[in-house]
Length: 161
Length: 114
Image (cartoon, rainbow over all chains, first blue to last red; front, side, top):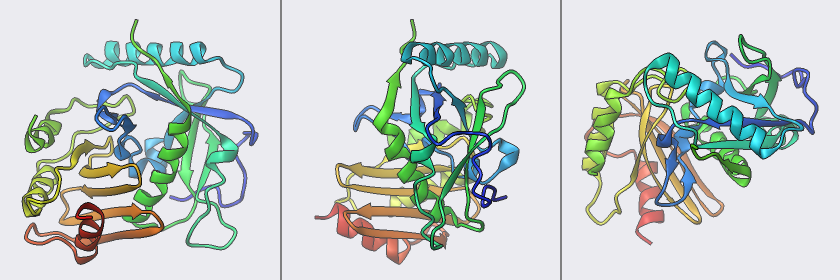
């Protein structure tokens, strides 16, 4: 399901900052010191039932406040699921930068939209979604590579205490 | 750890392993990734394994100026994207485990056998 073709940003300002909480070491490649491409699951960007690619609105928050949220999230997940989640990183980017990637399949189109979508227990929850409809898996692999390179520019390391 | 063992281990991931409702890949997805690995020429460097919260599994190669990202869902299809400088390769092709799609083969040859 594609959304956001109306050009709205779901109540967000272009200067707003969002961050992805990373709580699994499987998303990091220690050999090349980079995030793995699959840290950005293809289907998250097109499937609203999965909530979109989940990020939190973090405008005005310090790095330590953001890391505290990552640690809290990992602890909550570990307690609720009985399997270990470890605080790893927060990946931060502006709404403007995320929405600046062009849709390569259309003139004047954009590839991503960021929309505010509060969920139970997280009023700051936002979703990143792909705007064009009907993209193939390989098209999405190409787009998520753009997004990965953007988020890698502002990674906040959040080591466990 | 051996890359085939790492891929096989992904089958045993717990529900919500990534904190975002992640699911483990199917045995069929991992089997396709392992079949693909065995098709690679011995001159090609070993790729890295990876797993997605959406149930797909993959392998990839990455360097300062290139990426080859290959994924499987266990549905008889292979999806790939590769870049090197201004060049791009991508495709979604049937995969039966007996050959590498032509475009992907070209990308691997152009990027990894330089």
